[in-house]
Image (cartoon, rainbow, N blue to C red; front, side, top):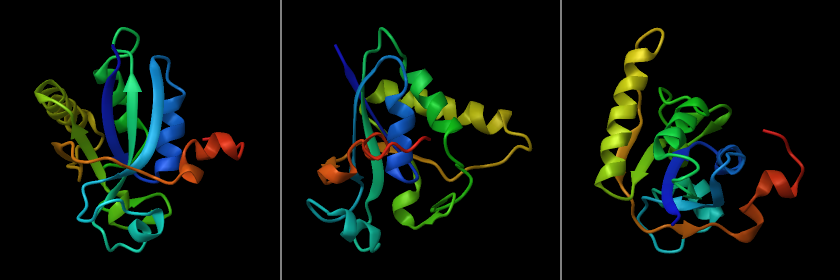
Length: 154
């Protein structure tokens, strides 16, 4: 039975492309989470008025890929020490967040964050928050599988 994982790690187009390429990931959807209004649009989130983060919701087969492996990919694909900035993208919607769906994910995320901090060279703290999942607002269809639709590599 597939499980869900939800991550915010910068521009959701790039993040979705990375997770979509993993063996064991069945489906990805981009959207918004953690804000204050219902059914936000991409434009509203981009205007920094909603408090939402751009997220990727990952449906995965735990018999083929573990949550731990998804966390490892999360740490590899973005800069967790930059508050509200990933590459050229700036704004609160690009913050680093792990939204856990259950207590097991919370524990694994916390352990993963601790290991990442200890192994960083040089050692550093990061801005990643680990919080319970909230309502996932799916982004408009034009944003789903954006890189694949436009033949853009990651």
